[in-house]
Image 1 (tube, rainbow, N blue to C red):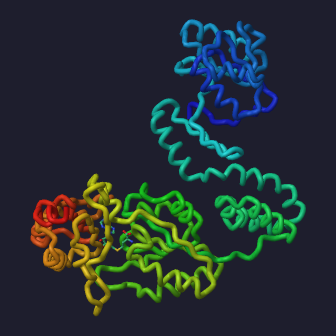
Image 2: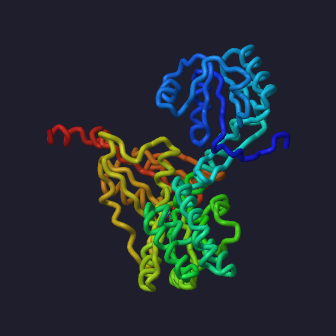
Length: 462
Ligand code: SAH
């Protein structure tokens, strides 16, 4: 570590910014987040700096001298003129200031990190200049991990520290803080219920302990595979979970987003056979939540699409356990994005349908004839084995054999594959290409194809 990270006290101290252009304005914006007195020196050519000086928040010194830097906490130099920068750096350093010269690392005593600001929580990221782009990427990752409202919540909790020390016995304090920072108060605050968060915290402080934990079940959509296709809410629920029940199609890289000490239970279904019967899963998630634990039922794609969500919701509600659905990106959306073929298209596709190739044993296939309609795009789930029936039913109902079909397998994973064919050649293509589940069969019957195949009907209609 060539540079040592530290947090500097800023209240009541002075920061000098030499330069009056955009670079100086950028540094000024950073320092404005603190309580430091800000002095900007030199000719001003930036309207934002002009405004700050006019408002009195920033003081202006046209010609800096040694006294300008005397006792300053930090000095940023960004005049745009290398010789001038060097001279000012010498002057500032001689006065004992810590100096940062913009874009001149060899002249710097200190470097500005990439900052994730959830004041009073602040994360600073540095790469010692080796890979600034990586630094920004890490910043983006952390930005997505930390909820925007984290700062005000931590500030609220901070204000209660004294009361907690006074009213909560030492052996109960740890439990209190875990509940406050992981439990209902935190979630209430994140959901925008600040008053309720404050009320819960104060009630617990007055009662001398955190209330007994209430269980909760979240049916969380894991998306099609790639972990950056999860929603931020899904990531939050994973990080709050005590136990996670996950399916076969959930990608391992998604599970890595969970808290390290969460229990993980695989309840996956092998194709065709249920390793875990649904009612067993229902009972288990309810039993875990009944112990006061945070349960995540992690499902591929969107839990509401062929995800047995109805049974799990009913089981949770029957047991009086709070339950929510966190939506995910369903395989059809991910496949359409991958193909750059929108699910609907003005003038061509006005109806988008999701259906399945495989029903419960003993149940009739879905009625497909109604899907063979001009202007319709259909995503067939669980249909690789049923391609023959799909082709037969749609064509018998009038869909042209030339309708374009895209088969997208394992979308957004390393095994992703795309094969294009037509409705007519669909079963043969699947066989010849050896396409395996999971795959979406995306069949499009654009309006223009109907016009092409039935021109007479169209003229008659007009
Ligand atoms: N809830 C899931 C669907 C579960 S049913 C969702 O919303 O996506 C399982 C079927 O989903 C598979 O047979 C396949 O048709 C589809 N599927 C799931 N993940 C997929 C993926 N990564 N690529 C292509 N199809 C996928």
